[in-house]
Length: 363
Image (cartoon, rainbow, N blue to C red; front, side, top):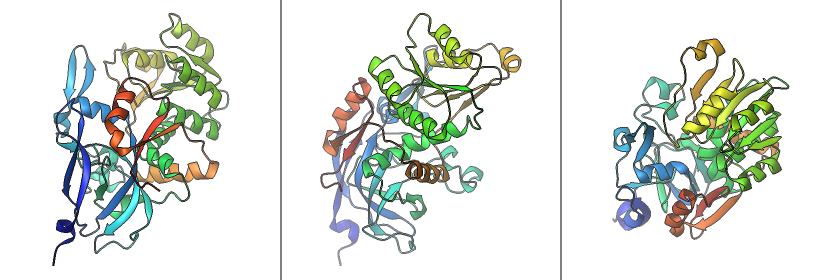
């Protein structure tokens, strides 16, 4: 008898060399074992992290870089970590889902055995197996998920929007949680008004957090931010940007959420928050953080990073988005075969919201 895997093949768009174009490759279709689930991909978001992986380095500032091979990220690799699809086959130990069910995939999968993984924080695992980062991702016809527990039911949410929740949604939710609770009258800055920043603005509005100032060099993105509900907007390249931010804060800028993560935004954010304020850096644009150490205790500011989110946080965000009918960011739907053009447009800043790639027969 011909085996499941031998009988069929699947395509993926693979990064074979750093800075190269993704190449369509055909390989045997894997047969799920144990608690594994084979998913047919219908939608996969295109994220700035995909650009970093394609480029192979992070900018550490002062002429230094981090080679992604030091993080266990090596071509050939199929990118794509915002994945929504349909269950095609399940391993013999899976009882939670069956073929035909549509699910969002939590892609931030760890080793499963360390203390962080056992506590539910697999996104912080030191030996990760993130789909689309260390493991085969969603720029593909199929993806193999290691355990059915990483599949999330999103109900009647638009699958293209839900796909973005696997990274941008859970990332924003986890970052916003780090600046709560919010005191009435305190103000918040959001740096970067692309897909993540726009999601953050929607979420802050739904939670009643603010007033909020949106900081972005692109006038069209600042306009979108104000349409969402930002009380003010700011061009970080303005010569008096720090003074404008201080004027908005009025001594009550409690927090800054930085979805850019550059030297410029970190300087504005850290110096802009009030005493006891919190600066949360999410973006990976790169550079070096320089700040006088005596000011940390004198100002009692909190500087912390936020990296994607846990499975529980993804479930929390999906439930919250459904409960408050969270408005989606602008979604550009493109065919999976257009992945390289999508990456180029994102790199060039030609994407106002998010690009989501769809399979040829996406539902």
